[in-house]
Length: 162
Ligand code: NI
Image (cartoon, rainbow, N blue to C red; front, side):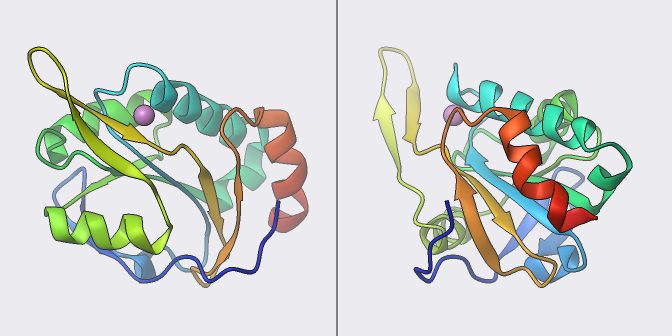
């Protein structure tokens, strides 16, 4: 799963309590980073449930993991909306939003594909669904492909948190 392409970089976004957050705020922890949107019908809920299950599975060691959810739909995903959404999946999960340019910068740094697609009454957002893992200095370590079971993720992460 590990690759050496340059992926990642600094970001400056707003968390689900309305506080400005940068990548540096999470240094010292391993970060699980996921990009999606709260109206996502299938991919996001499944992957976020996996992340929540993974953190619990790691028990005490899971406390050194910080799950982050960055919205790709800042137009609809306000801090308030993110607050109820992310905490449903894990009480320590942090939702991040921002203006379109800040979101695009963060998404592009991680080579996230996303595109707004009109629907009959509104729109949806097509997006890639990778779970990125960052080290304690905020550097990209690698990603888990969509559908990776929490047990398999725990096997990879456990040696890093002990
Ligand atoms: Ni999604």
